[in-house]
Image (cartoon, rainbow, N blue to C red):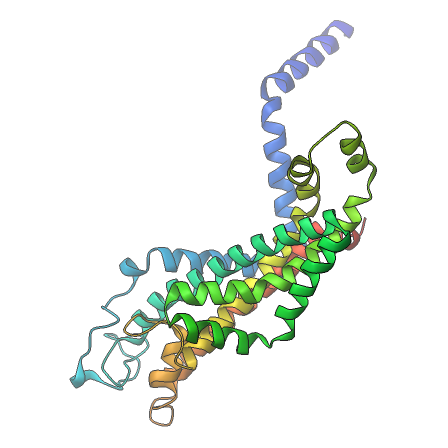
Length: 306
């Protein structure tokens, strides 16, 4: 009996040794599923964002019509089998415009958030680590940028550079930079006083190595949360600029441009011309905000409930 038990134990041990390298993957999958069940809103928002990104990447294949092609004989039509969401005042397919507009809005929002958050995080870490007069000078510059209302700053930059997609990205990046820099600086000031930072200085590590190898991993979670929350605001700001006529120039479709070009002018005749792009903006911004809140709850140790 003892020999049988030892044989079974040996077999089980060999099986665990043989398939042990699959255990971490299974545990990560189990944790992901458990988190998805605990955070249903975050899961739904993540799936919505995945669908939006898929739509933006494969927009030319999904759109049934050319969004810039005009058909005067088919203008201001309602939803039908030929035009799922109807047509605008020039006979352009509204569904195709929304699909291609997703590419413009997501590209502007994500690109501006990545540029602004990364640059602001770099400045915040340098400011927090350097301290003294360097920190004072950098923070006064950040205060000067934050003193200007975001919309006014965006209007000044876009008017000076001209309306284009890349100019909007740079303008939004400048608007995102100060807030990200202030938050990351606060985290950097806390990490700066940790023992492992002092140990790295003692052994002769250079400041650049300390920032890259020791400080950045400890503020990475904060940077991810800042970026996820900021994307929604960047998309909304891009739509606002397009609504004011300073966004992506036509005929490139954008959700804000749809609101101001056909939605505002023909709202009484065809309300859906403003409703559909407005819903697209609202759903996208809400999805990114909910995902940002979920990531904050997951990555912030104080909110994990442990």
